[in-house]
Length: 166
Ligand SMILES: NC(=O)c1ccc[n+]([C@@H]2O[C@H](COP(=O)([O-])OP(=O)(O)OC[C@H]3O[C@@H](n4cnc5c(N)ncnc54)[C@H](OP(=O)(O)O)[C@@H]3O)[C@@H](O)[C@H]2O)c1
Image (cartoon, rainbow, N blue to C red):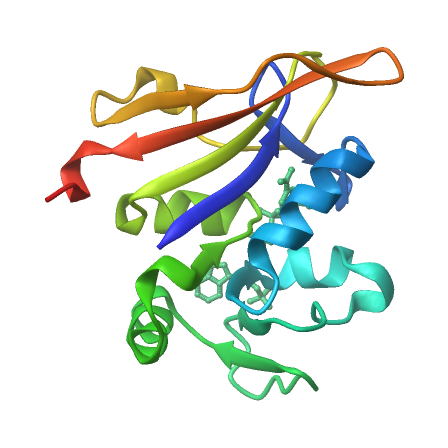
């Protein structure tokens, strides 16, 4: 299982239910990486999608405590354990945790790889990704050169969780 996320300098990921930036190259990376794969998201992240709808051409798993919730085009799971059971049906390398904060926090320990787009700006946020630079089991193993969208600098990075390496 892998994480995919875009963070600012202070590990911010969202504000008032929305993303902090709209960087087309990062959106393209997200789409190409997750296309035809399985994505796990929290109910708030689903609500933040265009029209509040699941992503096309992906198996969408949405986590909610509401056990009567039904979503057209998505599988609803009511707990982390139910979600982990459900994803056993798929190749683990094809499963992506796509946010938001509460879901990243709960699934971090189950993920082997984190694909982190680092946006080199600080901006007010109300939701965050854990600072994995401070976690001894997470190590950055790759970093792209600097990319720019207008005057916003960003890099694609990859982190590995040594607790889950063979
Ligand atoms: N920068 C990025 O890459 C990125 C990616 C994704 C999202 N985001 C941003 O992150 C923000 C949303 O994050 P968030 O933390 O507020 O919400 P979230 O994690 O997307 O969703 C939280 C909701 O998920 C459900 N949930 C979570 N854990 C659960 C569990 N163990 N059992 C049952 N249900 C569970 C609950 O839904 P119910 O209330 O239905 O019970 C909970 O209210 C938005 O601003 C979004 O734009 C950023």
